[in-house]
Length: 121
Image (cartoon, rainbow, N blue to C red; front, side, top):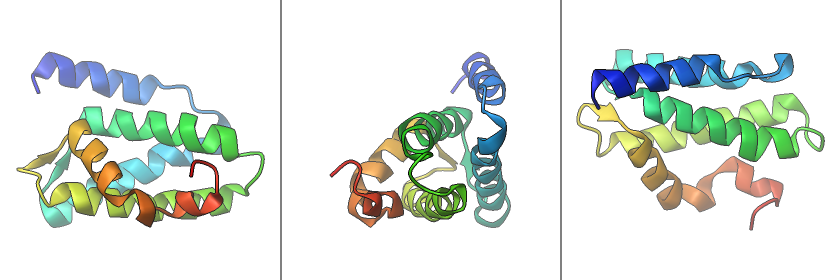
């Protein structure tokens, strides 16, 4: 990814308006990114971070937030993020892209904790 696009995704990621009660979404993505960057030496690209942020916030937390406790959603998303990043890292060289996250999501759909919430089928 070129530097201009990287900068754009970085700005989108950090400017995305999260309400006070769900700032933890960005925090778990940042923690996972740091862990992979340090331990695995694999970088989570900015497009991947933004993809995760948008999907976690808009497709999971916003529609399910009224039905499930934030603690439950946070636990499930932390678990699912680990599954997705572990899977994406198998083919990462040396970074995980948004495309790699999509592939990991498709490959691991049935293993995700959020699927147990009986929302998507």
